[in-house]
Length: 171
Image 1 (cartoon, one colour):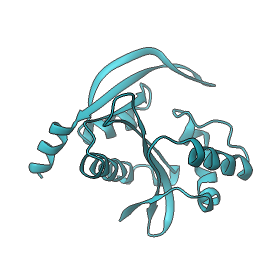
Image 2 (cartoon, helix red, strand yellow):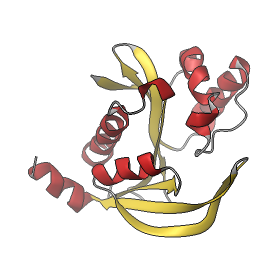
Image 3 (cartoon, one colour):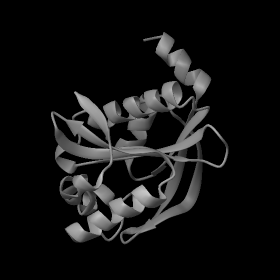
Image 4 (spheres, helix red, strand yellow):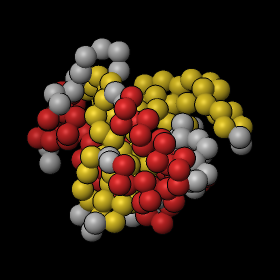
């Protein structure tokens, strides 16, 4: 069973192999985590400057398998969700579980009005995960994301509170 645990400095050693893996971070804004000290510095910065919900360390059976959270958007009650999942855990449904837990927390505990997410067009597994979680594509930004591999379109997704709650009643 997947659990959400608030991020703490003690998670650096467990997050380092995730954030230093280019295949995990290539479609995220996590950059330049080459050493454990880089990882510690990023966690410190997040804890000092972070705005939003979480981030939460994703744990399965006590093992750290990723990170998820949401950034506060410009309007009250609006959030932008994100997640990172360790490569050995891809394809096991943990990303979907993480998004379900995060959405439940945002809509039921935080009373979110809307949750958004952005995903790189080439990250097909991620945008399909968002769609399975109930988010709908709301737009695309041509050339909206760049990394060392190239420039990509950026898809926008969203789910409103009423749509989320309607989905819960259909469970």
